[in-house]
Image 1 (cartoon, rainbow, N blue to C red):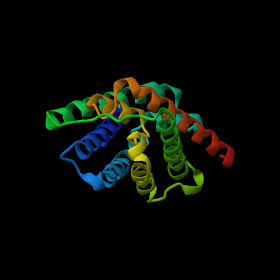
Image 2: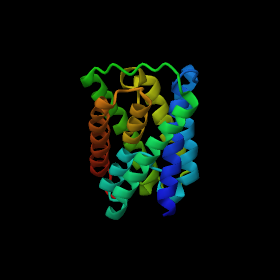
Image 3: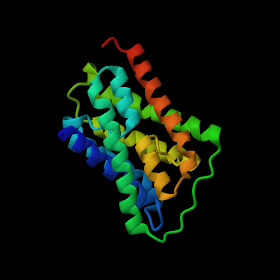
Length: 206
């Protein structure tokens, strides 16, 4: 139960921070830095309890990599998605009345950038947080958080920069993306996580 609560807390603060920073009056150009920072600190806070996934695509990658029991896969997803929904509701309380214009997706471009940076994120997670070669390092949270920061700066204007199905659900509920477009994120994110796990297994012997 502790690991499920930890996943809920970390995912909640990630999605809550995204909404508060992106919806006006938000953090402007500093939003990606705040988002990467909250992910970093939540990973440092809860990584030793749950692994600090806070992302269903990361959970899928860790599972396919063989570092997660099957019995935890669905419960992790449930609490991560629940946290995304609840965080969106809390953001709505604070940002009620704000003018929000949803992303007008170019489907091919959005899927591609979501795939690429989810791949990058999960690839980094697997290398810095699950590999024997980097076991015990002190930089894993920083590496993971800054991957999200880099992705948000690089392609946030293309897709919204979710790289996380729970975030996608949260921002869709907030109105930052149309709920009918959530499949774009689900396809790109889960595919990116799965391919990252396959690449990691191909390049690592254990």
